[in-house]
Every structure is written in C-alpha cells, then in structure tokens.
Image 1 (cartoon, rainbow, N blue to C red):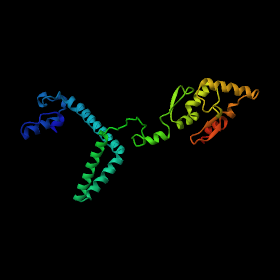
Image 2 (image 1 turned 180 degrees about the vertical axis):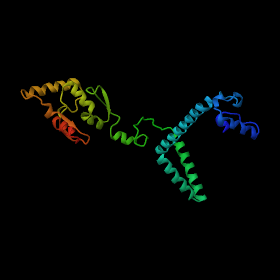
Image 3 (image 1 turned 45 degrees about the horizontal axis):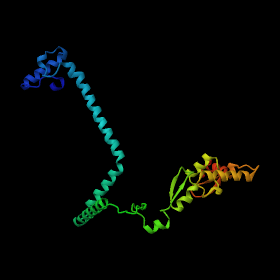
Image 4 (image 1 turned 90 degrees about the vertical axis):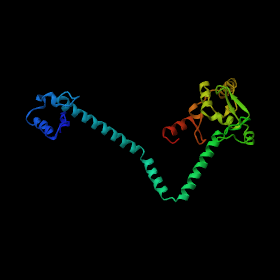
Length: 243
C-alpha cells in the first residue's frame, strides 16, 4: 500500500503502520515530503501518472495480444500442419525416424548438386519445360534454327516455320496491319513486307471496284481456341462474355 502511494516502505512494522495511518485522515498533498520515497515528486505523480502508466501498459499488452491473434489466424494452416507433423513423428519408432532423417539428408544433397551443376548447352538450344535444353533432333524437326523476320511486326524475328505461320493471327501482326489500314485476311498470309502488302491491297480494291471492303463482315479475328470469326460476330460474342 505504501509503494502504491509513493511513500517510503522502509523501517519497522510499527513505523510503516504509522506512516500508512497518516494517509487515513490527511490528504497526500498535505503530507510532509520526508514521508515520500526518493525519485517521487509528490502525490500528483504517484496518483495520475501511475494511472496513466498502467493504462499505457494495458494498451501495449492489448496490442501485442491483437497482433498474436492476427498471426495465429494467418498461420492457422501452418500451425495445424505442424501439429499433425508432431503427432505423426510421435507415432514413429526410432528406426523409422532414422530412416526419414537419412532420406531428408539425401534429398538435400541431391538438390544442392543439381543447383551447383552448370547446364551444358554449347549449341544454345532453347530450354524445355524441365529447364534443360531440348534434344537436337527436335530442334531440327521444328526448324528452330531458321529465322523469319516480319517488317509489318516491326522487324520482329520468329524462329521456326511453325511460329512464323502462327504469328499472322497473333496480336502483333494484327496491330501492324491495323496501323497500315489493311484488313488482316487470308489474302495477306505469307506477306511480311509493308510495300508488298500495300500493293496487294491496292490491287484488291481495284478488282472490287464499287464493292468496298466492309471490315465488320470481312475482317477476321481468332479466339484462344483457334476459331475464326468476322469482326461483327467476334465483338458480339466478346460483349456477351462467351469468348
């Protein structure tokens, strides 16, 4: 009780009792300063300041508890998996634990060896899905050594005949044809030169005469599955969310 009021706590039991009885009929503000402990500046500090310190400490504790609860919520799956792993290990025998430890060490050594080993690729072949160079026969089969440049795509290079044929329906070539004001139809397949595309477009317009090109019916679009639509059908299906 004396420490809570900021009074001295030394002396005999009788002296401490007398000091405590002083506060029964006398306010703390009127007590002599000799009764207060060193480092305290009177009852004001030991009253309101002590209460404010208690409130601050309670706020800090509440903040830590809130953070811990949030962390537990975020790591709930990990905590459950950890508990299951502990229960599983408790059910293992000594021989099974040793075998499991040896398998983990072997796996770690294998992974480190694979990471340290440099990939040997003197022919600079493209990488496959497994992160290793594709076989040379597959490289030759698809003709990936052949380079095809398209001036309409901004002199972009396509490696292999398959990629070159596919690019006529891709966004880069379509954007280039749209900038030239030419419809991207089958008549312009295999044409990569801007001048040749413009000359062919002039011939088609002269041949059509009065019948002008209607982009909403004649311009072709391709969806992700390879289906071909004219511009009007494509925009209608796209607006309805079907493609």
